[in-house]
Figure 1 (cartoon, rainbow, N blue to C red):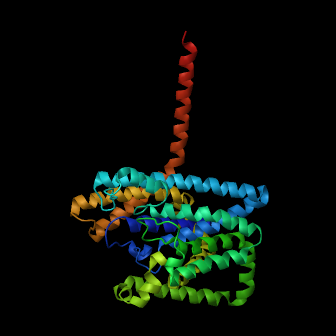
Figure 2: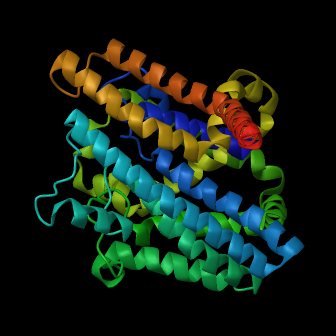
Figure 3: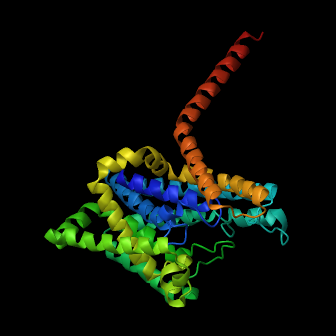
Length: 376
């Protein structure tokens, strides 16, 4: 549940950061997608951790082949969702005449659909499900190798690919190009997912070693981590323009598509502090934020799928009201808050909606059967 809650916060931050203009009061909490890390890192890493935990239990109870088949079915479902979201989002962009509508002048609509189906093309905001589809496809191989005891090989291979991408991207590029994928270079982002799988798979052993390593000094380590995070938070509030103007810092801290070492270090600090504080103060954290964050975290993929269409609607609304995709800070904050609450409301009501739909279909089937029975 702690992981669900933290993933729910990542969903909250992602929805808020994608809606509205350049400034918002919520950015003091979410980072406004300009901080040293974004919600995407949390999504990818936590998804890996959960996959490692779940599929280890699945493999131990039902066998490795059953776990691999489950991973394949999950990947296939996500692949179909990625195609559906991309095509539907493209159609929405055309209807609303939004800036991310795809250019189909070369090859036409048929070529665009073929490129989407073959994962050669993605769009703004549908790049995340595309990323997860590819990562899950490789996740099955990772599970197989972990089940055979090749943990060190998996970690070494993953981090070597990440390192090669940092120094020589052309040597680790995918066999095919994905047009429109400008934020998530898969050879770089896979390191978070694979490391997360390993952490989830060996969760108990890692916890034991951490206790033995830190021992009584754990409080000091946590205090240092909290201090560093607090300093970064103050920097965030003070503004990042000067720092982002520094080419060296930008390369090692803000270059999101490549996930450089600086982002990884900051993410490790934030992850440590967030999980520890959530554990220590679980009671009040769950009481005051669980109602919002737990449903979002437990239904993160569904929430993400809903929010991209809310982004389209709110972007069109902002264009109509202000003539651009930027808006005043008060309006932007209100719009983001409303967007988050709409996503939350749909997520909360969705199970009941599905149950009502099933009951309605069952009644229709009964009526059809009655009509068939009374026909001569």
